[in-house]
Length: 256
Image (cartoon, rainbow, N blue to C red; front, side):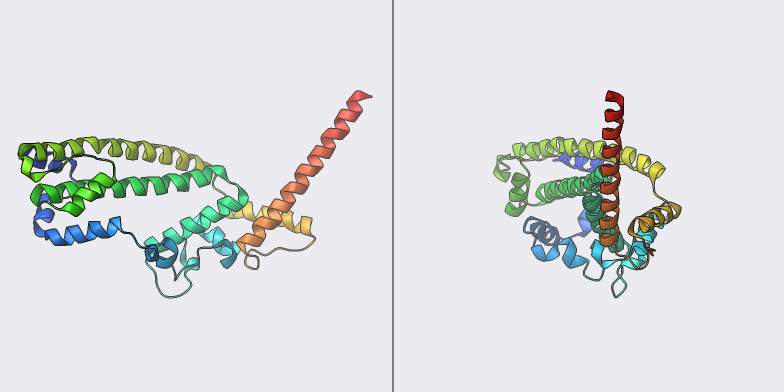
């Protein structure tokens, strides 16, 4: 038992003072809800006061988010917290990456989600172990089994019960290592992205080029992100087609 509590203190996931102050039934209730997550708690349901789709915002708002990290334009109504605004931006930017087939940025966002899932898993496992070290709970045992730790966890087995809890803590360190690796990968890719991050001037020049292509003036505050991407994709296809024609002409000239 002492060995287990020492391990829990070392990982510093739940401070001992906090653990003592929280009633066991509250912890059990919280983690039970984690096992039976309801679809009503989806990202879209929680972010109903914000724009999360590319067709809902103008390119000008998108530029403010991307270049200046100003997410105020994503608010549809109310005053959602900054954390939810950032989550709405993540969803919107993921769609933008899908539309433009921007592999690198899609990977950064995917890594962020993976880190969040791993951290949630680690917290759930170690909180469940803490609960079980103080009082047996079948729900907590089911939670640990759900995550693949197939220990018997029979409180009647005496010291073996606490040895198994300690073994779960040790095995869960693999998740900590995975989190560190993902964070390292994220930091590397983010640093590269910051070096290549578009500016407002980049979008101004691009809109000017697209305007010449479309024989019209394109204003960032009058075109949605979806429309902008569609025009850009069409422009790029035309450029690629012209490049292929030029290559054919060069080969024909070379063969003469």
